[in-house]
Length: 420
Ligand code: UD1
Image (cartoon, rainbow, N blue to C red):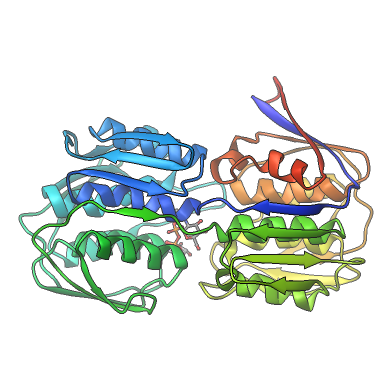
């Protein structure tokens, strides 16, 4: 096991490159099930979740190799249609294999993901959508067993614009007979990127980037090469790292357009920005003003930035409210931040953050990916030494976060530990 040891108080300065999007590549990798052949995905981050997805695909007979950000995939020899609990429990994105397997092979056995650290995370919309396309779905011993002769195009309205359900249903519909319309579809950039990748593979999709996707099924697809879009959550996290330490940080190889909601809230808090085509500089002089946020689907303020915002507001000059509407229980970071001296009150799905209290270093424990990032951010401003344990969570979704922060001047080390 490893932990981070952070000595707080350093102002971050300098430039840092943003990696490819975790949620982008995790949707694209299963898409390679749809057409046998060899693929190269570029700008792929070296992350635990990417290894988990690779292992799951390897167990199905798909070869994969990641070298210097290029992921080579050979999907010519798929010989299993199963995603076992062992993989799915580690990473819910494993559920993405369901749609492609049913579409191409007419069968799939995929473990139900169950809950996660911040509460229930249903997959009912994925299943309803596939059933509407004509798949026969049974739940047996914790597994979804799906079968289908040939999927048939249909109209599917999602009750909520779920990212995963949109991706799964879209990947099934591209090989269905006839036209499928998905309305109230997610418009997160990673879904738009997945749709563009599928089009490169020969799929026919209209309405990309809107919440109505019209998919005309084709008989077969072919492999393609694609570059993964920049990770907007890593971008937002590093911008906050710059601002919370009252420094000046430039993030490079990012897409500023994808982080508009984050930038706009940071501007309200008093941050200054310089925005170019693929790089953004943030400057902060003094503590932020208190700014309320409410998480929402894209292009709203992302739930994946909620915990980092709580940390940012700990530095503020007043009281702010952070309201979570996507995953109401996603506040595991709050009790850990309180161990550092943070004053936060919880009221249902809202954290009331009393800014300006002195934080002092302590050992804190990450229990989910973004919550762990919030602990690291708090460690950067806490007095003394903060140790963050269980950093395997942060390694799921941030490529070398410790190296990147060190490059910006943070005093953070990754050290082995027996602490669990
Ligand atoms: C994806 C992201 C995750 C992000 C989330 C919201 C990946 C791999 N993960 O997760 O990082 O936090 O989007 O932006 O891309 N829901 C249902 N029924 C379903 C599916 C979802 O009710 O069948 C609800 C969920 O409970 C939640 C909301 O829809 O309230 C959004 O979830 P969804 O967009 O599906 O999140 P994921 O795709 O799991």
